[in-house]
Image: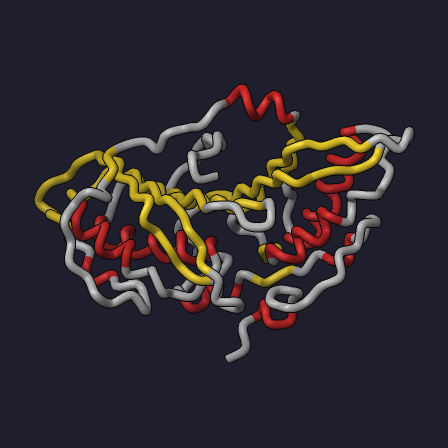
Length: 276
């Protein structure tokens, strides 16, 4: 079956347009992937956001002098569509030789265009390089499980049957791994990320979680769907009172994507990690 992104610029030669062109943005409906997971827009068991960071944003002032900034985009996890990443990059590049009177004007334009494509309001925050630099590099919370010894030799699809827990013991836990890898479903390029799992529920076996995450290594799917699959598999297993799963992916083409899914409202720490 043809992937919805096959009609997008992804994996194709593209002209880089440097004049404002919002028509470059390409939406990919979430509904098909939700259906694969047995979900609909009305039955999502999570709330959350996809946080994108752009490190290659630039435009011209009325004087002709360029400005640069780092942009944060927050796309609701229940928006009807995600924005295909290459089309996002092409759109942002179209601002390079476009004149804007102020930072506010750039931000207003981005909010309007991205919200129209996603189908729900998208939050945009432009930041100076000095501001982001002052934030420094963050560390992942909780226990790193990457040093655990596990044996696994199958990487073609996620294997929830590897996950184990002790339902007789309830605990609060926070585990993270930097070993997540999956592949773009269109180009086959690798996507590298770090995953955090915070939960209050049946005691999760850390080694089983590591083996499960490694089983994504040759799986073909977008960042958002990988995180949703991890969330749902853990939700079914742990029957938790609270569960949060998020991934911080390595940037490609000046953009990184960081999906957050949770049973409850949460605040996002968007400081970059060492690989971002």
